[in-house]
Image 1 (spheres, one colour):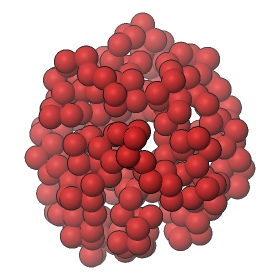
Image 2: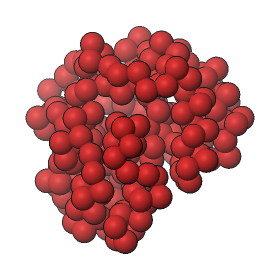
Image 3: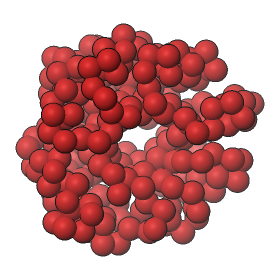
Length: 243
């Protein structure tokens, strides 16, 4: 199982939001590039980057920062935030993203989703971010009333090859992951998925590893790493069952 250190970019800085609230952001680095280099030097094997400006605005706004990161570190990069057209997805790939993450567009624009599955299936990851079990869209600020588990099942049936499952209610709180959500997602899915939300300690990562369904492919962690709750190596050991 892979650890994905998170770099969320807002106004040119690396930040973390609490429960998806843009008004509750903490700046952890003035430079997303510096954060990425630090994670790479600490032993990260991949990066998870979200363009928060793009997620809220509807189109990517920080591709230059992504381009700089891709040039500086030799790691796979997931990129999400504002990717709601074929053109924006291809721009993200051109900027150096290895995988592109669709959220809002995947739930609201099935024509776009089908085209991207046809043309970029191996590079496409779809994120279903939920509040109280309901999928959230538009940078986590809106809801379309769709049950999150139903959305996951429908996306797999449509042909999506990989998913991210995120619990906004615990995101950025370090109060513990939603193990029930992980288990339920594993029951409705056969394809690989990544979990995000609430990790605050090595005990949390060990709990995920112990209870993880076989198709849980990785865990995204942000605030706990920035706050020094554990190192990347310790986190990877915990996820592999050694911590």
